[in-house]
Amino acid sequence: MTSSSPSPSQHPSALAVSEELFAPVSPEVEICYQTFGSVDGDPLLLVMGLGGPMIWWDDDFCTRLAAAGFHVIRYDNRDTGRSSRMPQRVTRAQLIRAFSTGRGKAPYSISELASDGLALLDHLGLPAAHVAGISMGGMIAQTMAIEAPARVLSLTSIMSTTGRRTVGWQSPDLLPTLIAPRRGGKEAYVATNALVWGLIGSPDFPVDADFLRTRAEDTFDRGVSASGVLRQMCAVLTQPNRTLRLRTLHMPTLVIHGMADKMVHVSGGRATASAIPGAELILIDGMGHDLPTDLYDTFVEGIRRTADRVSAPD
Image (cartoon, rainbow, N blue to C red; front, side, top):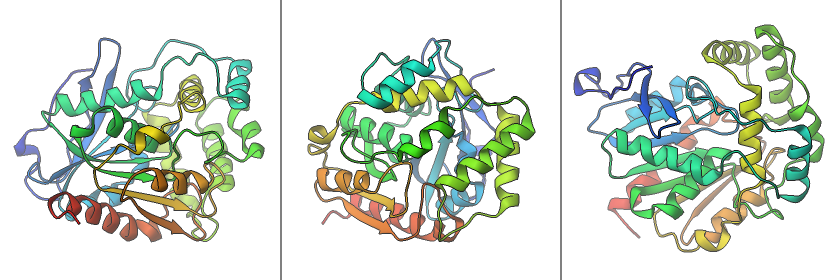
């Protein structure tokens, strides 16, 4: 892998898309990323959730954000897609203990994942950016805002939570499916992917089966790591309660959550919005733990509105 940054020539129009590029963010970690839109746009870093590569921020969604005036940066977290894999192993016993108690030693923390995102901004020469994260990505985005508030212009936290164990809980009946041993091969991955999204997706906004299959195939082809998902899950399950530190934030913030979310209960979104001064909360009936295409305009308009509050404060 080689390290490179997008040049202005790669972005001749507002809807230009870079190649997949690589950034060495630490001696152990290289991050794969891609940009949409003009470099003159407002920088927007998109942070994906558990086990999700950057392509789960759909191309159409990124293009709409670019058309709304953003220079969009999406990336694979460590242990997903084409970014670096970590060497540590997590046992099922470790994971179950972390799920039950919130304790245990994780291979890395949410804070370290946040450091990856900040280091990617360094690589791109960006002193600050708007940041939007989904699920685990929301936890990472919140942590970026807490640990480096001057670098987060605005914050959008989507179907995420504060780390407090009494809110944003996961439905217990999901755990057996999430940690079940996986058969190898593309077809097995596609089948499991369909099963999981059938459990956690939006009941009022069903996703086309062909879309899910194509995305799963593309995800598999870019690289999947079952052990990497367990490492990320351990980071999520052992994260600290950020509530008190979230109360210190002052950047414009939007919180979006689905009322039918089984992966992260809606109480997590409510608690996040309650903790951050001045945060806007959008709750959506019939939305589960995904980004339905029917709601893209709602998300884009919300992220744009929140970013605009930076230059036009209340």
